[in-house]
Image (tube, rainbow, N blue to C red; front, side, top):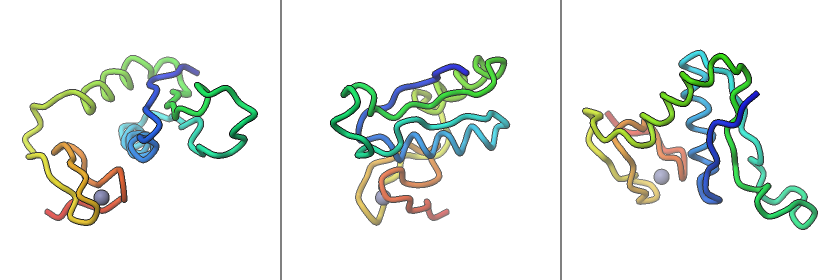
Length: 106
Ligand SMILES: [Zn+2]
């Protein structure tokens, strides 16, 4: 099992969304530290950042490529959009809002 990516504190929704997308690509993964407030005070601060871990090491390079593309590639044909529910600005390749889960209207 390998750690793929560490998210910011406010990116737990994004972590869950990307885990779902990896699953659709056939890559099994899990999100650690999803629950921000569980055990707070007992664990070191750094431990509460959400992380995606890839279960199968052989899938790691593929997962790395996928997540890198999703997080950085602006060449997606879909235009950026703004969530009508919460106002979050989202990149075109994301189908739903990572803040509130609202799905993009097509
Ligand atoms: Zn939203």
